[in-house]
Image 1 (cartoon, rainbow, N blue to C red):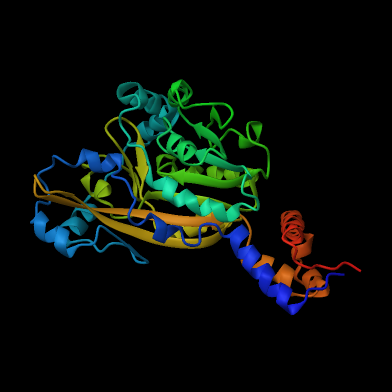
Image 2: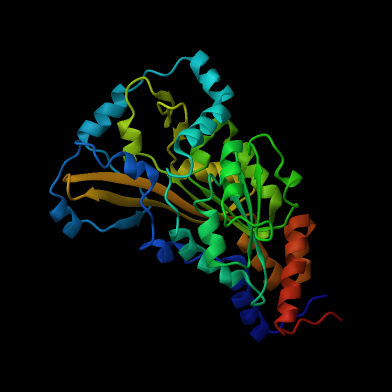
Length: 375
């Protein structure tokens, strides 16, 4: 029988907030640090959407976050409405078969020079300090879709106490990661993996990852296969572990630039190099992750303007930024607040992951000298 004093309940709530929700304030931390993405680089010399960039800089915030999708102009809406012709089924099947080949060719052409290092993620990952129960505790991070290490190596440099599992679809990208002078098996393990087919547990222990990142990765996967990827990641997350997601949002400028004949399906397009991109809505992601067992922590559109003062160019960028946990935090609160008899009635105690998390949290609370008595 578990007995908890009223004052201890408050302490437990504070401890749980620290342990299970490390990203609750992540959005605020990231506002000033978002990098210019590679997609931004592609538009810098365009003559479309020219405007008075000086007035834009004065009137438009660098980045805002909203719950609603960006409203299209009449011209943009007409363009999307008229773009109804789909790529042939034969070509779509060919693109799926050659997806890995196309990404390998992408990295062969661009090597390590295409994407900028994502130093803003180090600001995001400062929130991971809330996960630590001890100052020297090592946290396990999974970077799904690591590319050539533009997120991986800034993270290792910022916090050497992280151990990062880094995987990518492209074998060539993984080779670039391993050839980087900053790569060390003491802090990283890089391996090739198709998230939709290969079991992550072949390289990462089940229930061992504190935080997984999906940063501009899921959009490259066919929508029919995305659920395999998120379920795969779920298998290696610790109870209460988090997924940090950032990717292209509906009505992003990249979506509007696709020419006729590039559409594969709803919000799904192919680039000239054969790589593909999906543009997400909040509702789609909620359904996708919820079906895999995740609980949503936050969910928002990120609006920003990419401005080139020299060219007088401004383009609207739309991303989706979300945080997920692999268990329902409300149910965990029930485990601590309600009597054991009530816990039994909810059925929570019958779930192995909830029981594992309960025992883990209880041990942490004991270490924090919070009084829990078992008669």
